[in-house]
Length: 336
Image 1 (tube, helix red, strand yellow):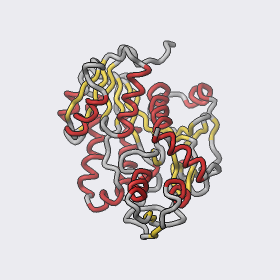
Image 2 (cartoon, helix red, strand yellow):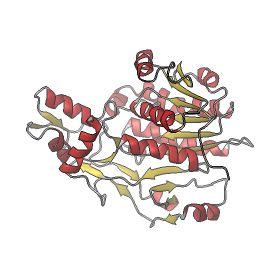
Image 3 (cartoon, one colour):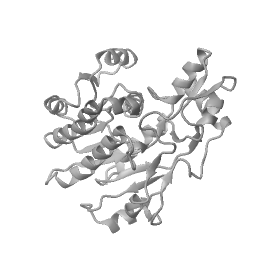
Image 4 (cartoon, one colour):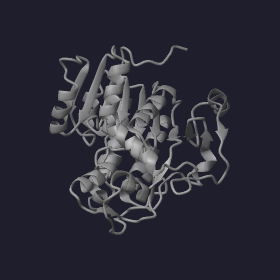
């Protein structure tokens, strides 16, 4: 079997101007300098302009900036022409905003997912990795519910591909450190303005993943997925109060109450998911109920071990927690 490589391949990233999209871009251009084409697909022209200053076409002739919305199926079909691999990172992701703008969230997260799938099936695309969230596990908010539907659509897409050689998979993880709109830059901004750190609930916990590990996980799925898996990383959790202490040890804390759609603890694998979940080393792999490949071959290939029935992966019950010190060190590394 040939070693996986992006050399001489064409890749498209939806939502490519976001935090993870930019990190993926840097990783791909650095590791695969002979990539044929890298298309940054997003709807925000200002973000594309800013990103083109960091990754100019004069220095990276393989990069393309393509204005488009995942809500626009015909635009996606055009963008996917000649593309080998797609990373679907576009999403409407702010929980409280989605609660008050449900139709817009559905248009992007569900209809957009369906458009990506259809465009992939109508083009030369052979691998698709869709990004998910811990909020899609047993969702209580609209954002999580739309991402759960999106996950199901991508997993099920493997059953409607016919004879086309294409694999769809999903990666699910927790809060990406210092990503756009996340809690770390929010707390930093409050600290720098000498304001109180606002916390919704002092008992809150969250999963924590660095943007570098998020990139590696996406690349792992792109290389190793057989089609239909939902990959979950083994990552630490943190207490929200510890994060506040790590960022702003001298600031006052203000408890403001839970926002619409917010959970105290997040979950990435529910007890119901455990019946289809396998431990494959660095990650868990949640398998489709009806895979179009042989399960025994998969177990052998990845040394997969089925998790105990009833197992759940919950940020509040995690065996590995960040401390104030480890959080502070990681945040310092981000700031370098």
